Amino acid sequence: MTTATTGALSPGQVDDYRRNGFLFPLDAMTADQADSYRAKLEAFEAEYGERGSAILRSKAHLVLPWVNELIRLEPVLDVVESLLGPDLYCWGSSFFIKNPHHPGYVAWHQDAPFSSIPKGGEIITAWIALAPSMVENGCLKVVAGTHTKEAEHTFNSDGSNMLSQGQEIAVEVDENDATLIQLRPGQFSLHHQFIFHGSGPSHSDERRIGIAVRYMKPFKREEGTTDTATLVRGSDPYGTFIPEPVPTADMAPESVAYLDEQLVSRHGDRYRK
Ligand SMILES: O=C(O)CCC(=O)C(=O)O
Image (cartoon, rainbow, N blue to C red):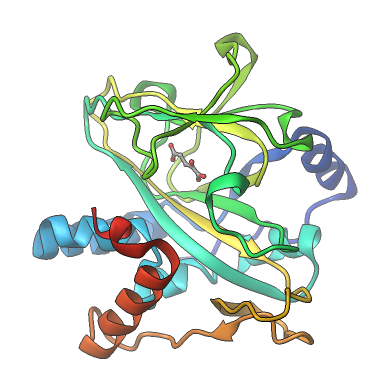
């Protein structure tokens, strides 16, 4: 199995990202590698059911060594380094999974206002596909150029919005302005923390599986605040985050206890729902 090699972004790609607020398709790994990660994910789901689904939604890289590999894929880090520089943290990871014909959708939203990103930090998300992500099964969609300012949000509790807080941008978004981020297994996209993005329900027999990995560079954080993150490349001159342990076995009790503590302190009990 060979590893996909994207390397650094070209100056033109960097300009595209800065202008549009997203970039795709890029190669994270081969289709065979994506299939083998998908098999691990589906074995984990079969073993842990609902509890497993809750874990996959937030920082599963702290309890599953194979997810810890997914946040460190060299081709992804090379690309993110082109935008954020040589020192990189993974601050979060979330699987976004849609089963065939599932009515769940992700309402138009921006990430930054809701993700408890520490003040002074900036996040770039790499959304890595482990299964085909196409318009039929509700691929990610974005509106180019909307990443330059924060928008008002409202909350909708219709039960089908897959976002944990039911958030939704308060202004009407014209679907004709959307770019559909269609990806094959092993490909990934990047998006900016303020880009308008969302995804529709599935009308397909094909499962949609992606992991959103949130990258940040070190920065001088506000006095008196703390948070944890995993340094995945380089070093941190500021001591921005408390370093997170790397799991050595799937669901080792000490790793599960650590994850639980982190998520309760960041989100309260909400993350378990
Ligand atoms: O996967 C999706 O449909 C939405 C992903 C998302 O909202 C995100 O990565 O921030």
